[in-house]
Amino acid sequence: MGAAVSRRRARARGFWIGGSVLLAAFLAFALWPRPTPVETAVVDRGTLRVEIVDEGRTRYHDVYVVSAPVAGRVLRVDVDPGDEVKAGATLAQMTPTAAGFLDPRSDREARAAVEAASAALRAAQARADLAEREYARTARLREDRLVADAALDQARTQLDADRAALASARAEVERARSALLQPAARGGGTVAVRAPATGVVLRVPQESEAVVPAGAPLVEIGDPSRIEVVAEFLSQDAVKMQLGAAATIEGWGGPPLAARVERIEPLARTKISALGVEEQRTNVILEFVEPAEARRLGHDYRVDARVVVEEIADAVRVPLGALFRDGGDWAAFKVEDGRATLAPVQAGPADDAYRVVRGGLAPGDRVIVYPGSGIADGARVEAAE
Image 1 (cartoon, rainbow, N blue to C red):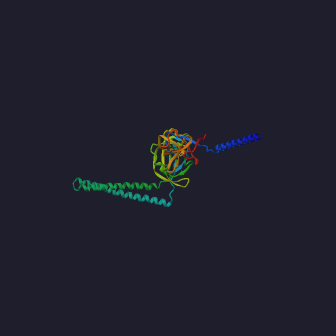
Image 2 (image 1 turned 30 degrees about the horizontal axis):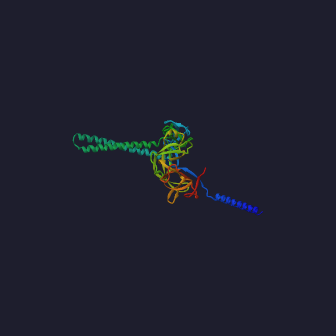
Image 3 (image 1 turned 30 degrees about the vertical axis):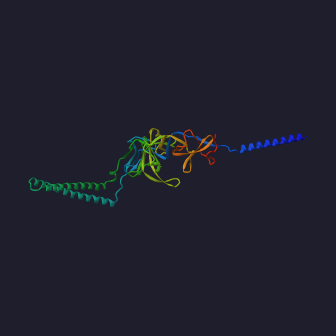
């Protein structure tokens, strides 16, 4: 009887001891620190391009504004935007506007001006006749050696001056008489407005028949054979660019088009950004490498201009999300034997995805991307699927 009780007590103790051991093992397993799942990337070697992107507009390099050559009535323009025209083609017809009738007072003033001009003409004619006779007498006296050469030169000079005054008086008479012409004698006929060059009609400011002054714009023509892009870059970005630098035109509705920097304008303008900040911007002119590929673009189309300001070949590249500031320096966490190791690096230029590093990391190293606050030097980590 006593032996049986002892055996039951021994089994009970063994059960409780075994349960305690299993519970301790379970708690140890549950509380044991597990590796932190992290996202990783591999450091590689390749080409890095530092690019600057800004908004731009296309434009035809040669744009012609055809204006009214005279004041008059322009007949209805027959061309529409998008029409192709040849150099010399007639764009519109104009009839010159006749001058208005003179009122009685203006008519009397015009007639008086004619009479005054005629009187001045008669006086100029008399002076010219006298100068000719004086020159003839002086020439005969010079042949007889009775006067010096200076007297003959003076007479010749006076004759030339009086003849010039006579011509001026005749022109003044014609000008005064022109004010008396009837309107019917001034106008008449039509004037053809012709295209100055071969191109495409961009705009027709004056579509309907109307009376317009001289110089009024009638038709705007552009040459689509040469299209360029004008992009406004910040002045601190424009100084980094070089003439002939590679560029890409994007965001126009088609595939990216190759371009290059043709010109950087020296004048900057103050612009107000969407946030209300004053910015100094300057125009950068880009030309297409293959102009035929840009024929689908028109005048003043919106595009995105991406210009390469620096290109580094065979560089050690690290994703931007793997680098962070450690004090005043750059650093990254690289994964070694399942643990995060802090690696100080010397960072260089960056593009939209990578940054060049020198020292601390080598191609093939695996680094943690976007490390959280729970990652420290020596922490256990595992790559997340």
